[in-house]
Image 1 (cartoon, rainbow, N blue to C red):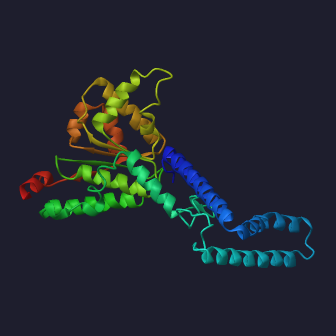
Image 2 (tube, rainbow, N blue to C red; image 1 turned 30 degrees about the vertical axis):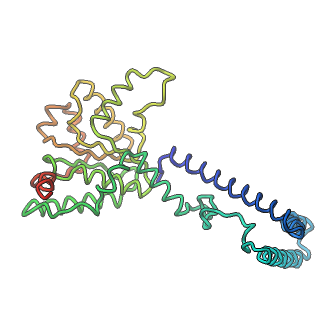
Length: 322
């Protein structure tokens, strides 16, 4: 499991900044209170000396250590009670001098005993929606919003199976070795919807995911050919590096001999490294053979789980309803 590394670094830095700001704010409050309540400075100084006193007691050896630590603890608790009483008697909350963390569970570290805190995980998931390219799609296109009511008869039975198997694939995605999926069939049958739903679920499971339309994918590869050394960071590296790549609407890109080369190299790289890909397309097997190299079609149908979408155009049905 590996969230997008850039997302992780940015969020971890934001946690470090939050902790520093929280500590600085607490220091400012303490300075102000000590100026208003003279007795408070002595209490704060003694509390701050707790750590050095414990360290000194440990260095003196094991003899009588437990008694020394118990005495320090008792004195510390008495000082905290006195501090709280002074604060409340002067109209302040008893915890006014405590550092106020946004997440009291992890104290804004993002981790609890070496395990990721739920607050950081949620931030990484939200960032993952953005960096994967599905943030504007996944609210409407997810497994919960996919309706089978638009399919009837044998098409309904087929799509129930497709939905279940595609959802199982996303729910059990586990990174390298999870396999790849081809979603094919006519226009408006829900391929993009389920492709985005897979991307959303895999992001939530903590894996580096990229969603891209076929046109954008190949435009980026074409732009890359003219990228000079020292130019901005590559736009295409992520397509090889991500744990799940979702290519939507394969076949809608501008055709060209370069497309065949780009697609073959990308598929070859991802298959050989065990990385997973989801492709949606309106193209039939014959169309794909005519448009792409036989080697590409062979690798896709040989390596991918293929699911055929059937039925009547769902988008047209929804338009008629409205």
